[in-house]
Length: 369
Ligand code: NAD
Ligand code: DAO
Ligand code: ZN
Figure 1 (tube, rainbow, N blue to C red):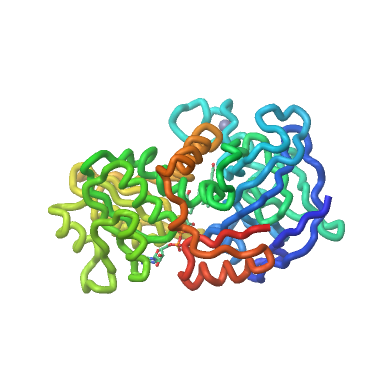
Figure 2: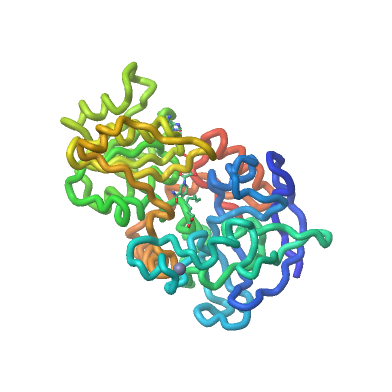
């Protein structure tokens, strides 16, 4: 079938809106009509050409929502008409990772996904007869996409896809990191570095966990308005201080925070986030994705004296098991996604959405087909 898509033909070039060919779903695969997709820095990172897993031409996009159109042989968990959120972190429920009870990093489709291919090692997309690669197992920048069954969370069909598409990445990542990775408890003091969608979602998660103090840190003071509205108790701009930001936070908190979250992808800030943690028990969670080849540093004594460094992918959330429940929270008014949606644009204007993101003017731009 034909599908409108925003294709990344070359690294560093704007996406091109073209009509691509999409093959039917094969065994264990599902054809999904994407109704909405947001974009995230990871798409921009891959498009820039510095992502070691980036392959071109490709259909990017990994924060979407849609409706099942057709299922391939053997697919039992979804049927045409079901509303779904594609998952870049699959959940097969059977692999060593899924059955470990210790991680959400399913290995079932990981190898081919990282090469821009479907699990059988081929692609379902082409343009003028030339193959086009998939991306993160989701490729939500095409109106019709093919996704592995294990990479789909089936959600309440009453839920607004133009909003719950955000649960495909950013919001789930931030909230999940608070509950699944850090396990923040009532009264804990939290520091959040970077107030994009991920950092704001960490704030929302910390409010849900009844954290006592939530310190929001960003070099762009425009971000403080929303951070406060979502529940930040203190806002700090590192540019207002002439000493390391970790020293400022340690002083503000009588020795450091219980938990910090790095939501930027800056290895220097990752160090600050660790070092603003309280001696003896403070834990820092790295969420931001640093550029390829970057390394983190601290004095080992920071760890010897009880601080802990962790990382979190997709908030430690098992998508097929847990996303439907998060969608129900949205339906029940317990999780508000409206603050994240700063722009809504048609597919044809997706490059403008990338510009808004690079200029720091958007939290999330939602693209509709
Ligand atoms: P964003 O760019 O919208 O937000 C980053 C914020 O950090 C901005 O508000 C910016 O002003 C601020 N900032 C930049 N440099 C700073 C500094 N030195 N000190 C303080 N603040 C600074 O990004 P986002 O969409 O919220 O994503 C954040 C990061 O999370 C990205 O690296 C993204 O790739 C990553 N990410 C990780 C996962 C995961 O599963 N681990 C999932 C999604 C996104
Ligand atoms: O299982 O080896 C693996 C990697 C799983 C991917 C984890 C992705 C984490 C961060 C990517 C940012 C997504 C937008
Ligand atoms: Zn698995």
